[in-house]
Image 1 (tube, rainbow over the protein chains, first blue to last red):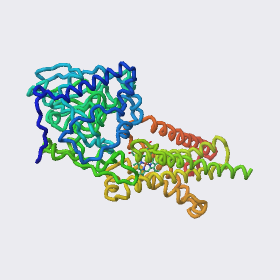
Image 2 (image 1 turned 180 degrees about the vertical axis):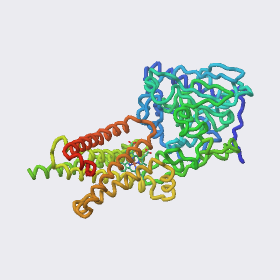
Image 3 (image 1 turned 90 degrees about the vertical axis):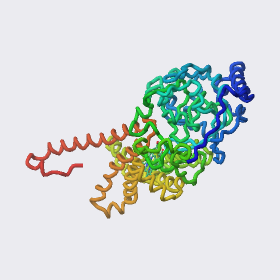
Image 4 (image 1 turned 45 degrees about the vertical axis):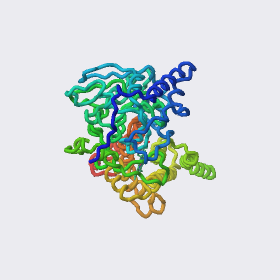
Length: 318
Length: 213
Ligand code: HEM
């Protein structure tokens, strides 16, 4: 089994000019937005000035994949805090306040704390990760994320040996999120969870951007999780809290419909959803008369992650 | 009078093609959004369902307005339900799956929402091909029995709709409410007729009378 990993240079050892540059571009972008009075909407969704187009490509990035047009990715969002359809979050999400933003890290760690987003981004050099993204609804995309390893961030808080699971929580901002305001569907805020080894896996990243630019709000700005071998709903958006736990957290969809959405939610063509098949998927951006794509076990990342589930019955732990 | 009715009929035939033109227009101008295939399924599926509902609305409307000329419209709308459902299925097979039969087989086998769609379609298909006056004559009494299957088709289509749902409950609930009203109307009429006939038939014969509609 080949396990691809990136050699990580501890954050403290590098003085990469790129890091400062990235940090400065982000701050500059934010400052420019405030000064010029451009609405956050344009600042956060304008893809005309890619600020991170020069970040190095991760070795985990699948360069051979054809990237889905940004237009499709930005206009087709499952973001239930805003709307239950996929078209409205784009406009509704623009009212989300993402500046300032901090992330609280706590639970079974030596050094709990609250970190400003700028500090996190300056301490963790960004890379581009081109990943497949497979939704549980049987459609998929290929997205060039800009982010960094979640494991690296967790290490800075020094997890205790008792930390077996990671719980991530989305922002609770009912005044800008209509479905949080009227208690629509799920228990808010949105919660997701990973096993610690899944969270520490080099493929698991926190993304702050995509397509070389700041993450659009409807795609999870300012910081979201991306776990490419799991169904999209695991990749929680607008993360404000990360807790390391002894016991598995109950994720939002698992709580809502436990027989439909499991804790693991690994992409698996052989385990159908109770109401529809997971055997094939519609790749967004592919035109009419293009057959669906055959779904791959672990979304094609089996080489890197299959060992995590070696002795598990994937039908039971779906 | 005849002219007027014929005009109305032609107008109806033309108007019922508008949803299709609209879809064609949106395809041509790339207006279907990020997931065009799903948008197409939804558009055609919705129109198949709407025409099925309109078909079922004819009898109540006829009862209320006492306008007898509506039977042929029931046939017309039923045929449009058949038409849009056929396009819906054809798009699934030819445009979405491009006749990849192995994948289609697995998809149908593993997707319970499609089973209900299939039940609805088999019924709508059978009713569509036996909708002519000639078939009505040919089939005699069993024609009416066969065409009562439309209620099962409506139920199956409703389940198909709910079962493929990913989030938004509001729309299918609206159609569910409509079908409850349409079928509820029939139940009320049926019940009233039964009461009436029981009142008019002498006591001894009431139990042998099973002809109720
Ligand atoms: C009379 C028969 C049928 C009716 C009235 C019907 C109606 C519908 C409706 C109303 C929807 C949902 C649209 C929405 O979400 O607004 C739908 C979705 C769909 N139907 Fe049907 N349907 C029928 C038969 C079938 C059959 C036989 C198949 C497959 C062979 C099929 C495949 C689909 C698919 C693939 C979807 C889209 C699911 C998705 O969103 O991913 N339908 N249909």
